[in-house]
Amino acid sequence: MSETATYDLVVIGGGPGGYVAAIRAAQLGMKVACVERDRLGGVCLNWGCIPTKALIAGAEFYHRLTHEAEEWGVKAEGVTHDWGRVIERSREVAGQLNKGVGFLLKKNKVTHIEGHAFIPSAGKVEIYASDDSERQGSVKQVLEAGKILIATGARPRPLPGAEFDGKRIIGAKEAMTLTEQPKSMVIVGAGAIGMEFAYVYNAYGTRCTVVEMMDRVLPIEDTEASDVVERAFGKMGVTVKTGHKTLSLEKTDEGVRATVAPADDESKTEVLEADVVLVAIGVMGRYDGLFDASLGVETFKDHIKVDYRSAGADYQTSVPGIYAIGDVIGPPWLAHVSSEEGIVCVERMAGHEVEDIDYDAIPGCTYCQPQVASVGLTERACEEQGIEYVASKFPFAASGKAQALGATEGFCKLISGKKHGEVLGAHMVGEGVTELIAEIGLAIKLEATMDEVIGTMHAHPTLSEATHEAALGAQNRMIHF
Image 1 (tube, one colour):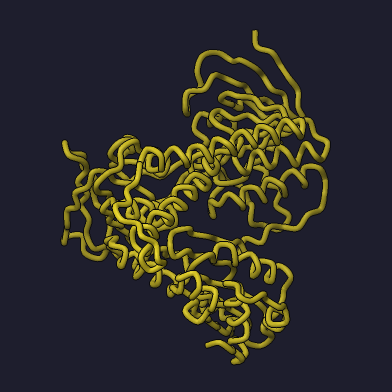
Image 2 (cartoon, one colour):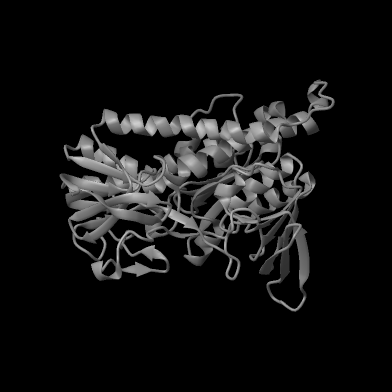
């Protein structure tokens, strides 16, 4: 007979949304259980954000040795790589952080329960043995909860008619654990995931072709930033086909045959042959096997429906007492957003007044080289909303620190209101910009103006001076360009 335990809150999912929510709820005095069927840390820590950054760091190091060593006075003849060790290091990094999450849950007195959660009714969670998305056997444990928080994340969206097989047609998880490096790869989708993997595999010698249906890579980013990245990838030898649709994928004895065509004329087909095809066209909410339709949790476009963008949102689903946060409820599918949603959700469960998340001022980062980072409004968004704005741009080629680093590609662009100079957005491309974007996120949060950015002294020599110069440029006061 299964045992029963009672909690104030049961969090389902141990990723960056779930474990952060669980810890904060415990800090607020709730008795909390966190149920995870796989590895603590979720996709982000185990199969996404963290291990990919480890792979990218290695790729950057290897690229400099094989392409730039002589410029730096380094003799690096005959440099090769050990693919197995490349993958192994990224797994070691993920493994260390996975242990860290377990420690944090224990430190904050959150009960960690391993298994597959199933919600038969509000206030009740059944725990089964887990085999990926399927629950196995009979109920191991029953959890009674005042509130249930779903934080189960998302899974890769397959290309219609071409399901993932984990070997030839793969998603991001398989891309970071391939035991053998493919000689060639087609990547469907030029968003952050597709471009990051294109950078990694190309750096180690895989022949990469990126196919994107939109008219540019990183289509949600600033147009000029996208152009810089596409040019850089071309110089590195990556083939990019924007404005192209992938019509079909066919597995062959040698690999995969991808049929593509211009998005505006599908009759002009082209066949691309590759060892492996990585499909990176987005994600869909992961709630399979979590509840039956009879529970009444409303879903919409492959995600759990929550009115999370309304003022005072409590992240409650259509069933009272059941909440949802993170990737499972929809865009922007970012770990830092999931964490913040988890905190806001449990704070409001506890009856605390906290600020709404500003979904229009969420920083986004892409970690290929050159890096891309953005926050706030784009020029296009300003035009669509009828906002009079000033766009000021400072190139890293004019930055002393960038010159010293040998990283002069890209720019820092700031968007500000024309009348009052309020900071509306930032769009950066280049070395280290993912570490620079937080300054402008804070400026937007504090409703700062360009005067205040200008009045903030930036240390010399740093890449952050580009932000200061771009702010000066909004007032036609730029010094170094």
